[in-house]
Structure formats: structure tokens, C-alpha cells
Length: 319
Image (cartoon, rainbow, N blue to C red; front, side):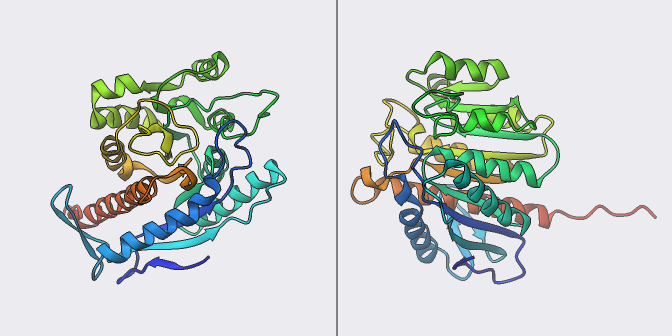
């Protein structure tokens, strides 16, 4: 465990753990550099908290509301000590570090690295809980690679397929949102075989962010106990978010992404953010600052939901 990012002023009701995964060794077909994201995003996230949160409170100007963060704790668990020479070992290291946070009562904020981060972090939630799980994936790509000679079975292109194989994530509870461009028949077919639900980028544009979020959440929480959210930055239009390793034409706007995440956040039990690549970001750190905002939104929306629950009147016992 490393630095205290946000200290609670009273006994914490809700705790978040920031965990960096500076790993892009499995990025064999995209641009490397995502390994630098955890430290770059950590800096911007800390700045955002330091500048905006005063006396445990902050104003959410998107909603025109005061948010009480006095009972929120955000701890920086540092970066996972990664074994870059061994994918299997690296996966276990990320799983163990994420599991430690979950077992200690923290909501994980797992920051990649390439999109290989989802499988080990999701596996930690899978192993630490009971019941079926839901998964919402914001991404331009399927990440359903079964196997090929260049990437093998474990890479940034296979995380969703490996997560489905764990057993308690059913295809009908997995929502892939923002897919666009072109995919191999293998990647598309694996998702179809499992019955994975999909909202393609053109469909998202027609539905709008909130309607898409409602639909994805309905799929993910049907008969499930926990929900995992993974955000691949290449879901965004690269004109707004150039700092990614695999830019696809088209995509979601930043506002759409923020609106989507803000809607689903109260129901989400773990979050990862992948494929932020500071090497390709524009000045002044455009994509990195956006990612810091996304994390801050997630924290404040979860805090608001927790405060709302705690303020509900307790049912009166009948005499």
C-alpha cells in the first residue's frame, strides 16, 4: 500500500483502491507505451482531487449538486511489480494485487497498461465473490481472440474470451459497447457463440449515452451479484482522445463516455481503465486529463449513491 490520495474526515463508508498495472508486453499488434499510463494518470488524478476537493466537499457542476466526500477514502496501492518476461506470472501478480484490495473492502480502480489487464482483475473479483457476474466493456474492439500464432491465447486481444471461460460470467450478462470498424470472423464468432450482448457504435449514436447505459446495465445485472466495468480508451473518437495505442476512426465522444459511466457507476463493483497511452497523447495531456475526470466521476457518483442509501429512513417496526 502506498499513498493516501483522499483521506476521509469521518469513518469511511466507501473505499477505493488505485492500482497501477504498467504492463504492455502483450501488445504485439498495436503501439506500445501504455505501461506509462498508471503514473501519468496518477499525477493528474491527484491534481484533480487536490484542486477541487475542499474540506471533504466538491460541487458536481454537471448536476449542479454538492457532493459530500467526507466519508470517502482513496488509497494508492502503487504499481504491481510485474514480471515482463512471463505473461502467466504477470497475470497472477495482477490477480493477487487486485484480490488484496477486494478482500480489504476496497473498490478496485485498476489502471493499465494494455487491455490484457481485464482478465486478471476480473478473475480477482470472480474468485473473491459468489454468484454470477456481469461485465460491461466499453471498447472499439471485441477482444475475443481465442488463439493465433502471433499473440497466443493471452494478450490484450483475448481478455474477454478468457473472462468468459472462468464460468460465472455468462454471455447474456456481458455487454460490449461501442464496437466499430472491422474484426476477424474468429473474434466476432466467439462472442456470438457465448451469446454476448452488443451495442455497436452506430447503434450507440442512435440510442444516446443514457439509453445505451440502461440497456447495458440491464443485461449485466440480470441474475448477477456483482458487475465489472472495463473502459478501453480506444472506444473514444481519436480526435478527442489521441492518447491510445490503437486508434479507430469514429467512436464515442468524451461527453458520451462520461455520461455512460456516470449512469452505470452506482451498480459497478470494480473498474479498470486500459489502453491509455501517454506516448501518443497530445499537449496538454488531453487524454490523460480526460481519464482523470472519468475516475473522479466514478468516485463522486459512487459516493453520492452511498450517501443516498445511508440517508434513507429505516423502516419502522410495527407495534
